[in-house]
Image (cartoon, rainbow, N blue to C red; front, side, top):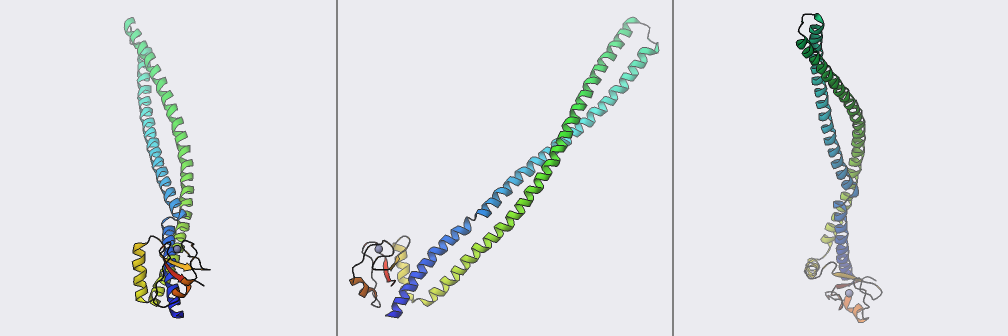
Length: 241
Ligand SMILES: [Zn+2]
């Protein structure tokens, strides 16, 4: 009889272990540090992308600045030539002189506006370079945080996995010690009932639905080969005390 009760209790333990394994599996799937790592990784990728875009914009601004500087040089040369011509005395006709003077005036204006443009580009580039340098530092910090988080996540996964592995080992050992017909019965009950199907009875109460069981149940539960079920929830009753 004792052997039979021990077997029933092991079956109940098997069920509890399976419940625990389910929780542990869920834990393994939803480790907070893993989620956080994933999130931070995406954040860093977005940041890196933004940084690349800014770098590209900066390179374009520099290119544009160089182009405008070349343009300015051409304009300075032109202006020099025009002024030289204007004051050389080689032009005598008034109309021609007037036209040339106008040309000098407009070229000066163009030169001035080009210089303003270049100045503006210089400011943009300086600001862009400062921002880029700051962002590089932020990126390095983010990478550092991510690395720390990755280490933590890996550790957390290892711990959770180890817990689950240990439970699985216990589960296998337990199964080996339980009679095959009891395991069959358990499998059959599991198919019909959702969740737990084995109830550990303590102080005369069903361990699953908590209903009070008639005292006559106890003797029946202790009889080898007898499967006694709770009339309320249908679970197989196992004497717990
Ligand atoms: Zn019950």
